[in-house]
Image (tube, rainbow, N blue to C red; front, side, top):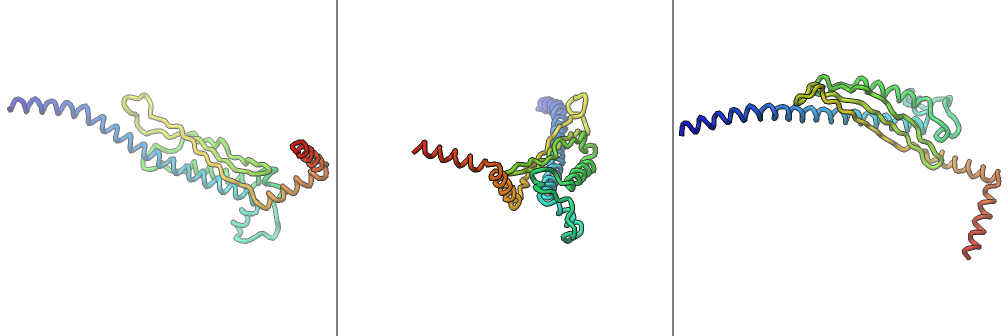
Length: 206
């Protein structure tokens, strides 16, 4: 019985020598993955906030001034006709700068060495059209694990992408755009041609 116990004791030590390091690295990997998801959630929140802010500034170019001064300015600046269709407000560029600063000053989470690397703002643009418009923000970055796992020559590096698209379309301006299109159609004779075409189609099906 004593000899059997000695044999089992030796096998337990050998098994522990193999299992414990593997379990340790697996547990450490899971902890680092949790920190990676924590960092990713922070970046997603920053990108979503920037997209919403840029969309708001795109819909109302005076919003930034109103927020800074706390009241409606007496003089209207940076107002262009149909700005939500023609182009981008200058205040939107400030949002891009704020986004870049927030991403580059973001911490490392719960572990040192897991800060964001190779940050690139791939897309920060306004997608305008007559019917609907959106603002899209897309950021790619990398997170490197601070240690190497299971004999890897280099630490694990994960490339992650965060993307948000929010609506911009302003209802009153959409009505103005429709009115502008109708006026243009009336002045060029397109309206009469469309009515003539639809009447012919109606007669054909009758």
